[in-house]
Image 1 (cartoon, one colour):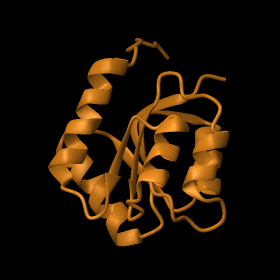
Image 2 (cartoon, rainbow, N blue to C red):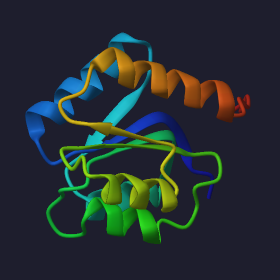
Image 3 (spheres, rainbow, N blue to C red):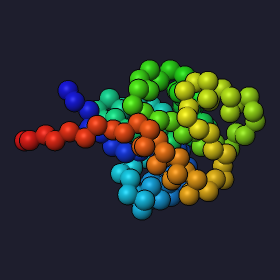
Length: 132
């Protein structure tokens, strides 16, 4: 079964912040969806794929960093960690686990938009026509 590709998956348990990020990305022309936990993201990713994942670390259930470490298929996916944790050890652990960038909350929405745009330039999702 072919997975449906979307521009960005936002994994953020703060509903207001999740909505703000999804809305902001949408205003920049990106198709984005939000999930409130790593477990919900796993279920979504079983049927979809995302070019960019914006990941919070302080999630209910599985912690964002633990989830990133076990996330197996990062090929074709960029990861931006957005977290209130700003210590160097956490930032380095995120980068070591496969994150492309780490943003400290609160962050500038324009900075996030540029990071997502840069991921798109680098990853360049393949566009395929499909006739139903």
